[in-house]
Each structure stands twice: as C-alpha cells, then as structure tokens.
Amino acid sequence: MEGAEEMDIEGQSQALPISNNSKRFGIRNSIQTNFADDYVFQIVPKNDWTSMAVSLSTNAIKLYSLATAQYIGECNGHSSTINQISFSDPSSPHVLHSCSSDGTLRAWDTRSFQQVFSVNAGPSQEIFSFSFGGPNHNLLAAGCNSQILFWDCRTKCQVACLEESHTEDVTQVHFIPGYDDRLISASVDGLMCLFDTGGDINDDDQMVSVLNVGTSIGKVGFLGEKNQKLWCLTHIETLSVWDWKEERTEVSFEDARSLASKSWMADNQVDYFVDCHYSVEEDRFWVIGGTNGGSLGYFPVTYKETRAIGPPEAVLCGGHEGIIRSVLSGVPGQTMDNHGIFGWTGGEDGRLCCWLSDGSATSQSWISTLALKSDKTRRKGRHSPY
Image (cartoon, rainbow, N blue to C red; front, side, top):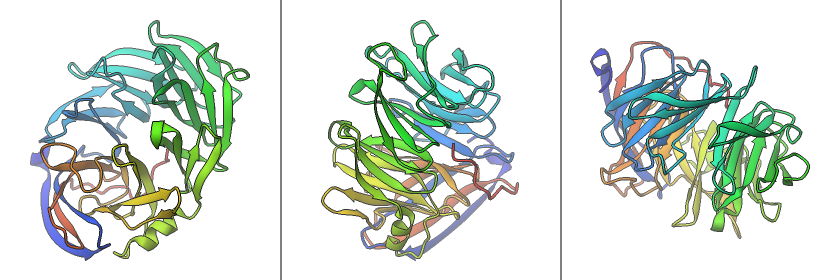
C-alpha cells in the first residue's frame, strides 16, 4: 500500500446505540492519500468497477484498486482545484475526464496516466462541472463561472455559449439520462434551468423552463421512473425533490438537517449533507448526512404520499477524523461487489476508508478502526463546497 511504511497503525473498537433498523458497517482498511496538508474531493468508479479515481486538493488524481486498495498510479497536470472527475464514456472505459478552476477540462488515459486531450474555457474562467450528451452524444457541456459552454466532442471546437441564463457560478450541469438532448443546469443564483440542445443552442430559443430553488445550489441528481424527478441539495443543507417535466416541487425539506439529526438515536448531530443515493431497482432514495467528527448516516427519504426523513439505515463511523467529502457505495444492506465491500469514503483528513458489513442484525453501530495515519496535524475547517 502506497506510503504505508511511513505511518502509524491504530486499532480500536466501540459500540454505540443507533436506530433498531440501522445496518452495521465496520471499516476494512484506510489509506492516507498523502503526507501533506491535503484532502479528498471526489471518488468515482471505473465503469467495470475494477478501480477508482480519487481527486485531491493537491490538484492530482490518484487511482486505486477498488477491491484491494492497491495504488495504481496518478494523473498530474491541473494547476488549480479539481472540481469534478468522471469516467464519462462507456465506449472509452480507460479514459477519465476532469475539470478544474484552472479553466481546463482534460481527458486522461488511465493505462499510461497521460493526458490525451484538453479544452480551455478561456482567461479567468473556472470550470465547476461538465456532462456529455446531446442528440447524438456529441456534445460536451460545462459550467464555467456564470456561463454554460458547449464543445463538439468530435472536433473539440466550442459550438455555443449560454451567458444570460444564470447570474452566478454554475455549479452543476447534467444531461438527463434517457433524454440526451435535455440539459439541467444549477447555480449559486438559486436557479435550475432546463435546456433543449436538439437545435441551435442559445439562451432565448432553447430554454425550456426555470425552477427557482431560492438559495445557492450545491448538487443535483435524478430519481424516479424514467428519471422524471430531480433532487437538489443546497449549500445551506436543504433538500428538495422536483418534477422537471411538470415544473413543480414534489417536496421541500427546509429543515432537512434537523429532521435527520432528530431521527439519529445515537445522539449524533448531522452537520452537513454529502450526497444523495437512489436505487433504481428498489425505487428508494436516501440523503447521506455527516458529522464534523467523521461519522456518516444514510437517511431514507419519502416524498410521495408520506413526506419524511427517517432514521439512518446504514451508519459508517470510526474511519474518519473530520468532514467527509465523497461517498462511493451501494444500497444500504447490500454490497457493491463480490468482496463484501459496501463502499468507500474520502474526507478532509486525507483518508480513503473502505467499509464492510459486520454481518450483525443487532441495533448497534460497530466502530472498528484500522487506520493508516500520518503524524501531520490536519486542518479542521471545511473547504468551499464547489
């Protein structure tokens, strides 16, 4: 394991009471990604789930085996914060894409760890998000400051710029799965905009609708039959679900953090939300909340007849010492591969933690730490959310 000989190994175990329906997960191992004052931004899996890419605050991307945590290699080239990474193209499974506040969007061959192409948004531009889609899957869209830029994937030439739809940074762009010509954008200005990219792309003719969340938007994603619903997490930790076709709010949890905290019987306070997770097979939806001390809970959300945030159905604790920034996992109660691994988490303590179920059905959350820990003191403050 990379750098393991330079670290101390710590082990401890403890049990804490939680909800009777919560699934217990124990930590399998933990990787310290570096020895400097860095931390993990995002973890994404390769399409065949054999490896994972991890973006770091050092502006590097490291690759590890998903099953064994073996270090594979790294990609270097960005000169500022990496805001998103993704294995975006199933037809090119070895190609990883990344965008950065240095104004570039790059593609990397993860076999050689070399850059294979790059597009530049221009001077003083920061790229916060990107998505591949369009009528023939030939478009690359990116949120760049308050603009949305489009490139033709075949020629790498810019073909459009939407500059009137948003007034502040565009934090998210997503082509909607199953509707490749429809693009959703979200921004710090509190708006989510829906565009039809099937014709000539411009602000006037291609905007289909605008959904007003009312506060700065951090993350959005899709759920429900045919991806007709849209979930939205804001920078003030509110959660809402929308029907983007009908242009209406399904449910809005302005007090989502407080509802999740009240349902957590382990006397834990949810300090922030990391992400949301939707199971297509089960048609179930969870919001993932964390504590400043490094614990994590999967809280089921109902948004149809009954609208509620329930007690956590999975709890991860004992691996991290600070805020968790990224989660890669399956459905609570299930593993995502034949190694019994439930998932991976990455945090501001610079650790990658692998989680296994302990196989118990009792109403306890098992804390079992085998952490490879650097001697360096880490920052406690939370980084800007986008």
